[in-house]
Image (spheres, rainbow, N blue to C red):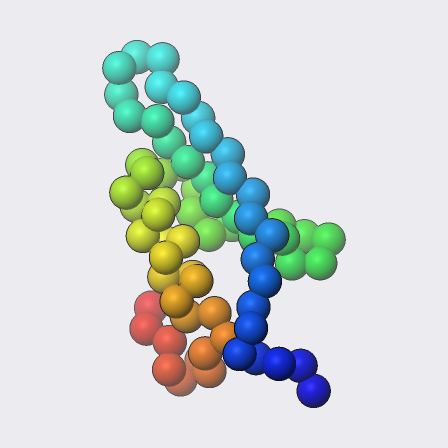
Length: 68
């Protein structure tokens, strides 16, 4: 049986640099087998990091214990 107490993430982070004085934007995904699943798509750093934090904190928890 797989150990659900430990999770490993293969992160993919893409940064879209601003060229017009606006803030940089980020896309964050995780590899799941041979597919990448998006956590956030073209978001400011504060939002991207909050989404990543939520994904890390809820990883491995039963669906009933997750807060969306």
